[in-house]
Image (cartoon, rainbow, N blue to C red):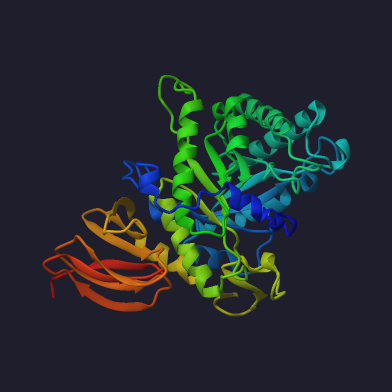
Length: 435
């Protein structure tokens, strides 16, 4: 998870990000149709910072359409005496999630003062202690749909002091992977949760054989550029995964190893950002991930971490910080919350099909299918709103703004649907012609 110190590493995110949004030129597979695209509602999630939610909080998370939460599973908090584990706080968290059909992605992370003075697990005895603890946790929660992630942003000194060392991380991840395979082979293990899409760090992990133990590769694609620029990064990363994965790692079947966007958001007080634009970025980020075969997309984060006006870390949330006891919505929604809710409601039961080319690579018209029906998301990264013609020549559509407000309706003409698109997505729902 992010800390305030981690934000000083924004320059790392920017240096790692590919800023061009002309993904079709950079990678033919970006935005391409996917044969087994995930249902929209199944993969949306948020990062949280608690094990004991406030009354009404989990319901509000679920009402927005989030079906995953990502949370630190801290070693020092659950093993305070060598070899004795107390997972009771996480028992309470999982119990609060299950009635709302929300799953947990739990991060096996950080040091423990019982071992090597709380340093990251960088020697063999500490690695083995970490692996024993990780397996004990996986056994405790076995069969409850938890995804286990090996560490958080180990490519940053903030989380792997004094300086990151990929060889040390690889040794830890291999120790955990081997222990999981031997003792909890049915539990899902992922990594390495890099800050940014750190290709050298990721390639070192793949070369060391970690793809033989991971069911997915997790990254944090932070950037202050357009979220659509992640498409070419995903394409490059997927190519790297394909080069290094073992084709027969599970019998004779060639198993796909997906990419998970495990942490990514926009602070509403970053330069050029606002509450309203943050909501726009949430919608575009999630749509970009859905159209680029990312099965789980986790927004950072659920609620604002504080109220200091110009502190970026305090303003990543989809809701405000203050708890409102007794109200139907116990936290005040920001536009980002309404954007998540509208996206999930508009496309529940639908899966990404294709991107329609409407003239400019900066224009995005995405088609989602559900049975015999279709729905459309449309926006542009261009600096100005403009009209486009969508090549759909039949149908009457209701238009919804990305935060849920109605924007009227439109019917196809001889050339197709004539739309005005802007940086804020709009959603088109086909209406029945029967009266």
